Amino acid sequence: MTSRGFKATARTSSEARAVARTQTLIKGTNGIGTVRRTTLPGGLRIVTETLPSVRSATFGIWAHVGSRDETRSLGGATHYLEHLLFKGTARRSALDISAALDAVGGEMNAFTAKEYTCYYARVLDTDLPLAIDVVCDMLTGSLIREEDVDVERGAILEEIAMTEDDPGDCVHDLFAHTMFGDSPLGRPVLGTVDTVNALTADRIRRFYKKHYDPTHLVVACAGNIDHNKVVRQVRAAFEKAGALKDPEAVPVAPRDGRRVLRTAGRVELQSRKTEQAHVVLGMPGLARTDERRWALGVLNTALGGGMSSRLFQEVREKRGLAYSVYSYTSGFADCGLFGVYAGCRPSQVHDVLRICRDELDHVAENGLSDEEIGRAIGQLRGSTVLGLEDTGALMNRIGKSELCWGEQISVDDMLARMASVTPDEVREVARDILGQRPSLSVIGPLKDKQAAGLHAAVS
Image (cartoon, rainbow, N blue to C red; front, side, top):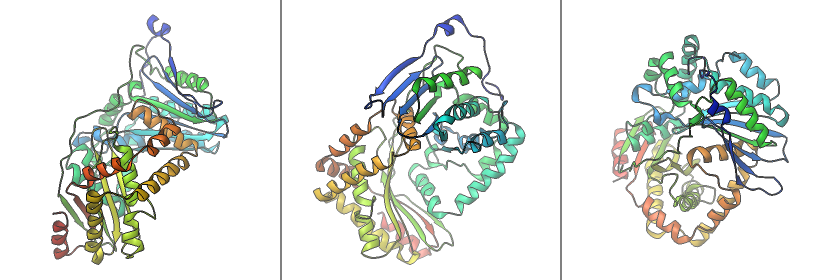
């Protein structure tokens, strides 16, 4: 691949004979909810979910690259590249790319995470061929010109500044650093001012060439679509760009690893003149492939996932100490995080921490009641279904599943797995996760005495 996209090569006789492999992964009812996968010669995977009752379609391409794939000197390169793929190809200028989707009322965007990147467009079903052509052109034909790198650098630095102005966001980056240290998972997805300023067009092109090979990509499409038509249109777009070079290439496997997170009792404080103190108290969680993740999801929902959750009731409803308080989980290929966030007045930070710590310790020792577990399962099942009511959410589900797990699970099977979680499983995972010594991250206007007390709060 050159700076003008994937380098075209002559088709060999073996390539000409190579055929795509198609599988039905989930068989829907009367064609509704059917999920299919086609693997093209060249290693590109295409997964689709059919929903004939809607008039929209969402098309996305997932790349098997995130900020954890960056070296320290490449910090922010994945996110920088996400921006640059919108800046123009040999066929389209940046204005052409945005105008094409605007002209049909479509939506187009992208996001970068620690382990993957996604580019997507949502359009009327009749405009799906246009969305496919534009997004595929961006992924295979980005120019990554020097002048675009220089211009976009300013926009990214402004994005970093905007994030820095929101301590409620920053505290989660601080907590990642508290838990993972100066490792790829501990560094911010956006990079820093210094690393972004140091990135050059040449280094970003090399990063593009390494990580945007078709074997590292998953195409996902959901809505009122025809799988075979999507496959033909995607294949035509990639072949036109000369991207499917090696007919014997196979897709990369989902991430694996043996990282064991042993962080305990670490405290990181960042003093700022803010109106609130922003707090995250947490500990190592579970990898996304861990079978106990279903029980952890129920535990998380009961602890801090809604208005009836323990943390919401104890911190906000009974005492009015915070407006926002919740728990969350983050699962990566080989490790995970469990965290509790609260935003409160600086004078109340010790009270909030004490209550949160008491609740975590109590649940670790005594578990949750059967009533709490039943309510959490019902909430989790309902929110899962309601969250899949649009084609964008469906595309995200099948694309991420293919990239991160290499398999698909039907909604009915997901709901059944949630419903099958037992109180004993929830209590066991509570002991394993919440029984660990927590770490703490705080951003706010903290006095010296407060800071000393915060260190004692996790001892």
